[in-house]
Image (cartoon, rainbow, N blue to C red):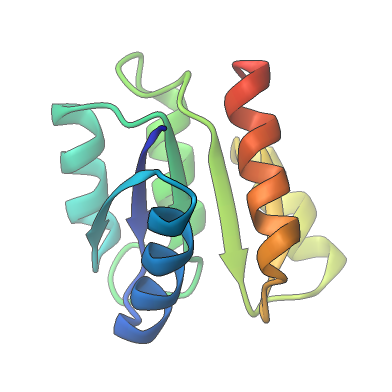
Length: 123
């Protein structure tokens, strides 16, 4: 069981991801903005972060860069999940420090496999 922080401005996506993760015995905290997600992650670093890209205010690329450059949260793996499907988006997300980049719609088995791999590898 891991503590997973979801940062996404879509209540529907939060509900879908939360349900999936809780069924897999993970504890979930969800916030609806990048700024709030950064605050939560710094206050109590989770085991993993699921990050949306397109959000009002700070976007997921900026938030990922902020979190991966902060000594308090640099070791927390970030999985970016987005509708942005261009290869340049994936490359940019990984350059910001994301450990995985998944496009929507998300295959549940693939997402869980990705999360389990990141949690078990410690990276």
